[in-house]
Amino acid sequence: MAESVREQRIAAIRRFSRFYTRRIGVLHEGLLGSPYSLTEGRIIYELARRAALTASDLGADLGLDAGYLSRVLKGLEDKGVLSRRPSPEDARRALLSLTEDGQAAFALLNARSHDEIGELLNTLPEDACQRLVSALETAETLLSGEAVSPSSYLLRPHRPGDIGWVIQRHAELYAEEYGWDISFEALVAEVAAKFLHEFDPTGDCCWIAEMAGERVGSAFVVRQDAETAKLRLVIVDPKARGHGIGVRLVEECLRFARQAGYRRMMLWTNDVLHAARHIYEKAGFRLVATEAHHSFGKDLVGETWERDL
Image (cartoon, rainbow, N blue to C red; front, side):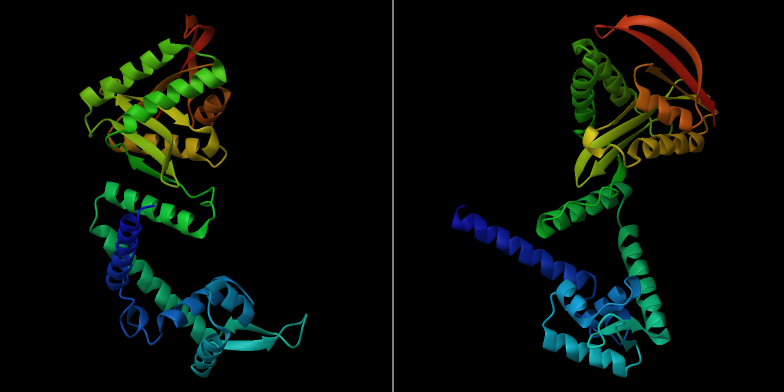
């Protein structure tokens, strides 16, 4: 790596660090307007969410020098925030816990932190909020060296580039998993292009699922007629399956359709798509029609499902 590029990256990260510490008030004398420092606040948080920690546990988790940590803990103890008791396994080790005053301090800090971040997000449009959360999850993953929790995903509206991904991933997955030919990609491309050309935010929507900043799923709602919405292009990438993303995508589409004033929702699928059919059935759809057809290089049985909203 060229030295100039490395120095630019260092400068960018330092610049963001200065910006963010200023933005969330870390430089203020008391954390969130409280009498506690940032370190004290973090210790209170850890003791509130994890029972019976030792000083060595805290030091290891927070990366604090033992001597410095000892002084901070003594200060919190003097303030009546934490208490110590001998460990039943080893009397030489003390278990730390919050007192009633400590629990009250945590409740105050937690509420103020929640409200402060909420106010920050209120200044951003929905799409920007989703992008911010995704970017922070990516930063956490890269810097910690640990994968994002499998349950950590987000749904967001589509933006430029998403529809191309939907077409590509549908074509790839259905070829790999079902052996469907290129005519399926042509169908998906037609559906996707029609969605973009005729998009009306009052009656149409697209949800994109992201995990660790990467697209892993999609679901669309389009207008069939004045009273009927159609669910289309529901997909979940194999690496993201098993975490309820498909169910959540369908739930959000149903919620959107209700809010848009539709009275029913329909969808078309094929009998070989067992996982998708299970999601639809669980979401309250009922099978109303079937028809054998030869498409995408295969003999298939098409199915129409419906449900009232």
